[in-house]
Image (cartoon, rainbow, N blue to C red; front, side, top):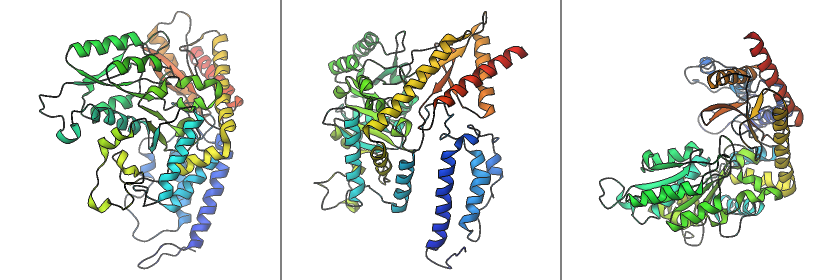
Length: 486
């Protein structure tokens, strides 16, 4: 029975138990049979909003009514990232132990801004991130914190790099300063747009992000980086940071981190390694080479919510210079002074957020539930499935691979005989749209050297060989149907 207090207090525990049990039962059934849903939502723009009341209710409504609307209105407007046929962008998934951790964290509703406001939030985060460091084979000396996304982790890293220049930008700002040269940041031409956004938000100016040319395997060219930095120094600019990628977004290329670190050190540049997607693959022993040279960097970002089966959102920023991060952000008003502040880590000091939710609990539970071997085997399996799919593309006439398959992403396209680039792009866009509209699988695209390219990314914990085979069948059928019509 729905009960709403007249003046104060929460709903009854019994009503919550009934609704929560129903929600957990639905989640278990949903994850067990998520393949029944179309992967990409079929909602039209504005359709979900139109189905919802325009004004809030005057009187409280029962939780059961909200669950009915969730099933009838919200779920049809969801693109199902937990679907085993989700191959777009970088596929992710929320595994059962991570979902349980998220539920418990919501129940506790702890705020870990200071150590004293919830000691377990701070200390479990430190333990959990040290576990992850060990799993990936990194050396000692890394300080870690959890943020929401790699975009914020990268912003923090470049803020630390800017502060370490010694120009006191924190205190004096950047405007109207004759003593401040143009500050330059360098990355691959295939780097993620979060780096662009960080230099914009930090006031460095988008013009001061230098995109460095890549080789035939789309890896940053060290000699091009060296030349770009030398030219900037000669022009009176100040290089402050280089951002190599371990697993670029479009094609998962691996920049040569050891060479980048060596060059960056000559010019006192901060090195931030973007391994948001691929970093956790180093948990697999034979893939540990992916993080070669990273122990010489200043910071690193990896996203457990991408390929470590942890629900959104959970990005991890590691740094070897937490003092620079603290120097960029720490601020202590009197109302936040505590008697333990000099003997504890207060995570509010290492970013712009004051309030911090209990994100480490879900990651801790995922790592405990699967262990080193279980995590490695699941990541290894995804890489095997990607190689199998690449083999299907390679040996089928009229299709081609567009980039080396380094991990669990395959870049490919349909190439009919005699078609020019414009026709190939139009055909592949039509193939992707037809496949996605059918709802069995969901793919995304990119452009490589101006060429339209399809992407199939494997990363969902429930994706099996049959789902990959289905994707290939759907692609071939769509291509055949479109070409017959033409």
